Amino acid sequence: MVTWFSYLISYFKPIIVAQQHSAISGKLEVSLEQGRLLLNSDKVNYSGGSLFFVFDHVFEELGLKQIIFHSVLILGFGTGSILELLKKHNDLKITGVEIDPCVIELGKHFFSWPKVPNLTVFQDNAFLFLSETTLQYDLILVDVFIHDEVPEYGSSEVFWKNLNRKLLPGGYCLMNWMPTKPQTRERYNESLAYAQQLFTEVQTVFCQDNIIIVGKK
Image 1: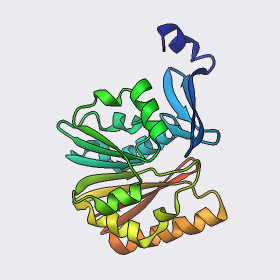
Image 2: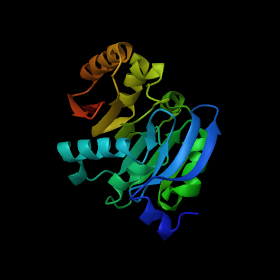
Image 3: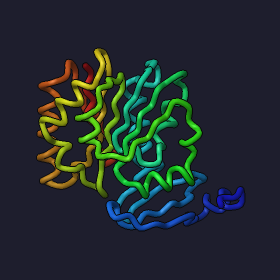
Image 4: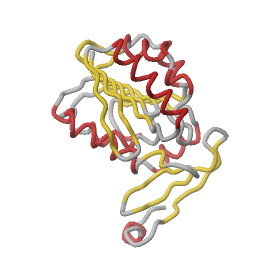
């Protein structure tokens, strides 16, 4: 249980709230740091920390906070920390896709997304969900990582074509990358090339070790 005293102490040192082992992500840890709940693996922040601030930076730089969205698809939902960026949108229908059932369980128990109206979360592979859904969205956020690596499908032509098909005209697609290794950089460049072929406008936004590919249809 997270108490007000825990929140106070967390400004001086991290408080470990829960730990769980995932067959997909390995060791997962919920911690309270600077008054904020985070989900971390052994290698990276999965939700609530630096990744939230990366998307917050992109939203701010591109003026997306001023755009009214009606439907959003979040691939790599995590614990739903990115919902904080969308809370000003009334009647927004949100679909989240998260492959790791342990992450979903921790999200339900420790984070507030189960209370969000018009939110549906599926435990599924993002590639398969995107291939099979018949719905379209005016905002697609892609944050699919296993530790610090985007799965192989993330740089495939099929995946990018599906992203384009499932985006409504005038909509935005944002995909997060951490191309810090030569092999990952090569895959990132392939993804950028597909985005430039498929979308009307493409931008890249740099933040920390992350690069967000932004496509507008």
